[in-house]
Structures are given as structure tokens and as C-alpha cells.
Image 1: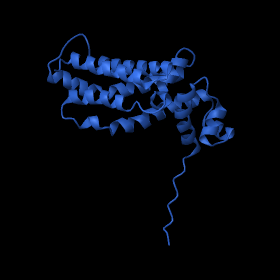
Image 2: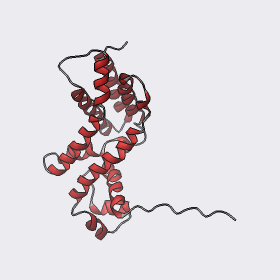
Image 3: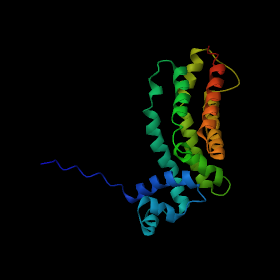
Image 4: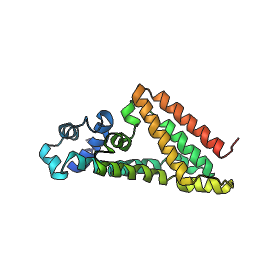
Length: 205
């Protein structure tokens, strides 16, 4: 007699809608995504949508936080943290970002980067939630950059925080180029340039 498989845990409607937002908005954009699209992807009714969220904008704000939580765990478990040298961890982060440029363009581009490009002047709540997500991720790089600067005695007109944000600017720009061309290779080339820049900045061989 075969053992019965335990049932898979069911997502609640709110989580299903947030997961749907991560997928659909990256594929269609914020403006191009309707409540019906989100409900269809999540497998819930429109009534369920409005039970959890007052509007599409409210869902987008929550989705930015959900994106941070989801990707935060992903990056926390990434192998670049294992390097003993902090600069190797910084360069390993860049290498990891390049390695995950896989699949179709919506599969590797950024939800909050997509949303803020469309809504920065029309939906301040989405803009602020997106900014918090991007800057929050950048902040996770600051300790390693700070340690690498200290080990190499680097001082200048820049800070660990500014470099961490610049790295995000390059990555977001790489995503835009990938969207414009439909090609991940152009994004990978931008990430390669970013690695070379950081190597030069820290004067590594």
C-alpha cells in the first residue's frame, strides 16, 4: 500500500494575490495590470481581492514589501556570503547578480524598479515603498563594502552607502536595457562593467 502524500499547504488569498503581483506586474507593468489579471493569476475572486486590498495601488504597496521579504531570504542564503574577504563578498554579490540573469526578461527583472519607473510622480505611496525596497537591499551591502574599505585603507569622496546605491543603479539600468532589447546579454555586459569598476575602485590586481 502506498503512503498518502501530505497535502500541500494552501496559500491564503492575500499571499496568493501578492505572489501574483510579483509575477504579473513584472510581465505587464503596473499600468498594464488589472485587478482581473491579478485575480486570475491568484485564482481568487474579485470580492476576495477587495477583502484584502482597498485598491490596486494598495496591493502594489504591499507587494513591494512582499518583494523585499521574498528576495531578502533569497540573497541571505546566497553563497557570496561565505567568502572570508569582504571585497570577495562584494564581488561575489555582483557575480551572483549576473548568474541569476536567467530565463525570460520578466523572470529576472525587479518588481519595484518596474513599478517606480511608472508611478514615481503619480503614486507617491508606491514610489516610497519601492524606494524603501531598493535602498533596504542596498543597505545589506554596506557592511561588506565598509569592511573592504577599512582593510585596504581606502578614503575618498565616496562612502560605502553611495557605492551600494550606485550598484543598484547599474543593475536597474541593466534591467531597462534588457527590457528595451529583449536580451539578457546586454544586462550581463553591464554587470561585467560594474565588476570591473569595483575592482578598479579597490585597486585589485
